[in-house]
Image 1 (cartoon, rainbow, N blue to C red):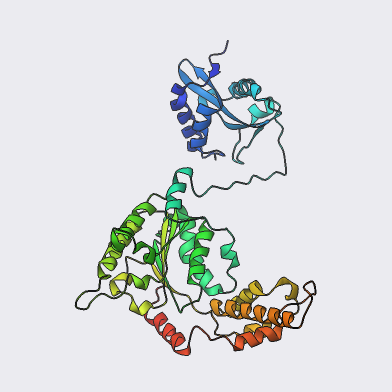
Image 2: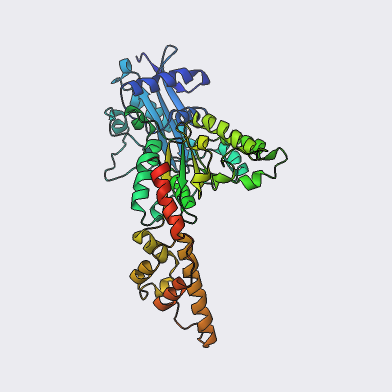
Length: 428
């Protein structure tokens, strides 16, 4: 006669499930499902336990998804293994799940699992050449409302790959920011503190906002942009609205917070009488240390005029890195041109000529020139009476003419000042 028996799961069995989970974890065996999922299925789906007296010595938990069932958890405590309890638990669980009308019962097991006899005894087949894919949803249900109230969003995951060229900048941001934040446990083993705040600086239109969004995309974290101009209309004033915004941001588990043109609220203090914005600067200086105390978040501030920022704003302890973002290199210019040239004429345009002619252009300059060329080519086609269905589009000459007619955003003086700022203020 068995010294154990199998029955349906009761709420009082949760402690027993936890003990089984901890025993598996102590044996360094991986789990496919998280503990929270197992406990939720115990109470909402189907579960059976094996008990010896009042002690839970084994458990099987299942979940039905349409006509397919999944084994969420199967475990037997050490002293009771190899006594047929696992097979009996699977049989009892299958019987309990029968009303779901299942046509298939499946189980995912980690490669480290060694005790699979219970499955084989119950007629489960090992399926070879299968791969298990998993994606963790970055924003949980309770965070969605806070994210929506802040105007935040989850960005597409391909933005990082979409930043063409700029290899040096991408590699630097990948090493300094993305990797320590994406792998915090490994960073901790090596004594690396994941960064909490960074300043991106450079001439106007060089893609600082694009990089900030790409970082959020690469981390798969929500992106929240703070607009000081919008907060200024709040009844509690800009400083109060800024404080409230950062308080709401604290409700998110992970987030990249972006403040563009931060010089508007962090300019050098001084003068008599004091500027009305000095109180806002003081408030921001107090908010950053508090922000840094929370894990799973990154503050990215961007500025076109880093030399106008208050010295206290840039000091060590507030920002981990101060990274220059300059004009796009040749590879980046080519990637930007490719983005705006219509597919119908892409093979006929001399890209190398456009890249060479647009040296010194910002991404915004290239976009302007590309759109101007397209508009000019369309107007000329209409003036010549070209049929709407006839093939056509802007050519190399159209783009080169548009480049000549575009005034560069970054002057030689601004470019020289940027190099000086790199020498004096960059922190990499």
